[in-house]
Image (cartoon, rainbow, N blue to C red; front, top):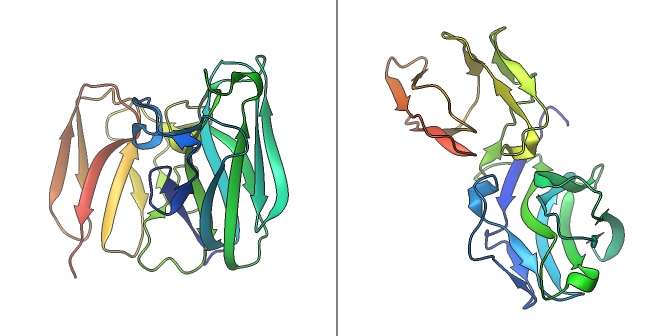
Length: 235
């Protein structure tokens, strides 16, 4: 990713994502899914579309153990790839369905069509969860910095990477079980939020530098994609 580019996450419920009448939001989402929401296709050849300006895009979702299914993806009206599963495929959440890189830095329209084959109208296999795209002009956008971006984030030696976490965005997380472990991020912006999965510690402290205020999160609840901390930053 170019040094002047950043990632932006768009949830399946964002009004920028447009669904035909064959799509619906399940009545109950899973806690591992971003915002606990997904969309499913109930009919063949029904499109979901998302327009963005950027140089790459990745589609994420949930794969259920419900049999064969396929997803056809196009960019700007041109077939660009597919994602196919069967009953032997890996199931899970935050699964990477498809990625396109080296796109021209201009406006694009992504179209997703799910083919559930014999399972159309009964039990679905593929669920659309969120998109992550890369753009150079992020003014007014909520930028996503993944824990795997070690060129941007600094960890104390006690943190260990986990690259197959079912309940984490992009299926990645860093884990520490030692008191005093720290992580640092330098950024420019007006707000920062800190997300994580499966809280096991009782108390965590977040110190905002250069200001001296300190914030505490107290939790014994196991959850996913949970907001640990949110800070509004004033000039």
